[in-house]
Length: 174
Image 1: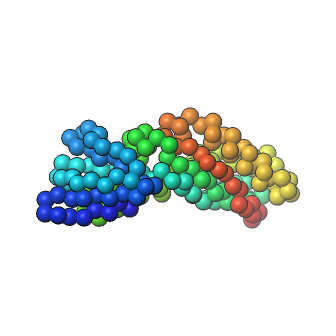
Image 2: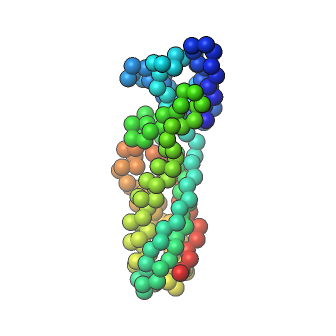
């Protein structure tokens, strides 16, 4: 969260080194960078804050394997924003100029997108194996499939994101 202090009609913003700031005025990008600190007029400003550190998200996917058993697959993905300008065009990272907190919840939206992109890859891997095979070799096979599939996904690169690592934490049959 950016730190914003008020002084009469102006505000001072201070961001941490792992926060990338995009400052817009009159629809044009005025300044951008990680760890910025500057004065601004709040009535003519729009500010977005993006994390440039590694972000971790965990989600559960429920699927049916080849022998029609329901299984739950827990996946942990680590990703990062590699092009903040592209990411800010696709997801709302704008912050409140009073509190410095995000107006929406962009990291939750990104977590939902990663789960969506992963779902069909996990489904294809799980549906090709029975429960016993899935428990024996499934985690490695699913991790490899996810890693290759997500790195080859053009829409991820178009959003300014990059996959850092994939882990399959748990596979639990119902």
